[in-house]
Length: 83
Image 1 (cartoon, helix red, strand yellow):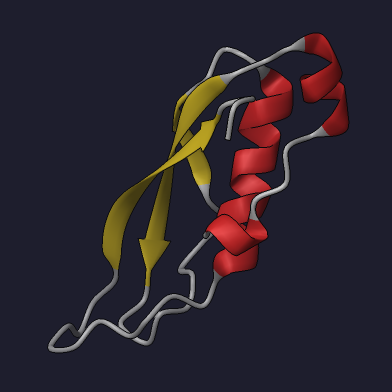
Image 2 (cartoon, helix red, strand yellow):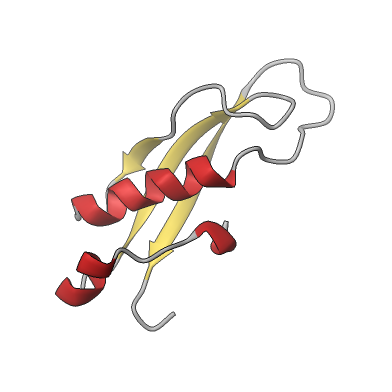
C-alpha cells in the first residue's frame, strides 16, 4: 500500500493528519468485490477520500488460498506529516 500512498498537497498545506480505517471486500482471487468504504473517518474529507483511492489503486490484493467467498478486511491508512 505504501507505494500507492500520496499525501494530498492541500492536506499538507493545512497540516491535516489522521488515520482512516477503510473497509474493503476482497474476492478469493484478490480482486475487489466492491468499492472501498470509509469505516472510520480521520475527521478530514481530504484524507478520507485519498485513503479510498489508495486502497483501490493497491488492488488486486494477493489471492486468498482456500476461500470460495469474498472476505471483508479493514485497512488502516495513516497520514502523518513526519513520515
